Amino acid sequence: MFTGALSKMKVELHDEVHYTLRLSSDLCVNDFIGSSIVIEWSGKITCSSCGKNTKKSFGDGFCYPCFISAPEATECTIRPELCRAHLGEGRDPEWENTHHNVPHFVYLAASDTVKVGVTRAGQIPTRWIDQGAKSGIRLAETPNRYEAGRLEVALKAFFTDKTNWQRMLKNELDSSIDLVEEKWHLHDQLPSDLTEFFTEDDEVIEINYPVLNYPEKVKSLGFDKTPRIEGRLTGIKGQYLIFENGEVLNIRKHTGYVVTIEI
Ligand SMILES: [Zn+2]
Ligand SMILES: [Zn+2]
View: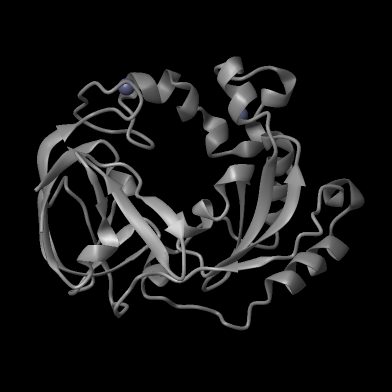
């Protein structure tokens, strides 16, 4: 039996993605694909920033006071174009300086469609895996988060920045997508003040997920309505556990929920 507060699964890219849940001890979730598991929520939620109990969680598992004041819950984590780290400003200028006033990538990721996103330099391919992308390519490397956000906003005219989680979990892919072609086609269409940070690095990283078979219909479960979730685990994709009957559990959405897992 494993107990602890849930957090985003740690991912490592090998032939397929390796997933680790960090609870009372590290749990390699891939080992339990094909097995029946029970995950039970204790009714407790602890804040991912201050660690205090909270009745409800906001954003990525924050209590309300942290959601409105913690450096990592600042709005520019979701909307990079609002970042002011490069000006020495922001909710917590010191935190901004070490987390957002550093090199960032704008990327394209492929699944059922092409998606654009922004991430810190060290977060590739983690970010792509967390979104359940089939593949990804670096588009531009910028000196800070604001410049990446500015480019991303321009790219939203061409591509979405949202993941359709149902399609992602049903493994609906568009195999005709050519990320290198999309990247350089964009380069030709954008004004030159937006292309100065384009990178020559055209490596396309392919990602395989540990899934026995993909569901035809998916139904998302949550602990607020279903405190005890059980079933045969048939795979893991993005930050979701996939069960035999097409029920899925978004682990990241339940950051801070204190659970026990029985296998
Ligand atoms: Zn808190
Ligand atoms: Zn920022």
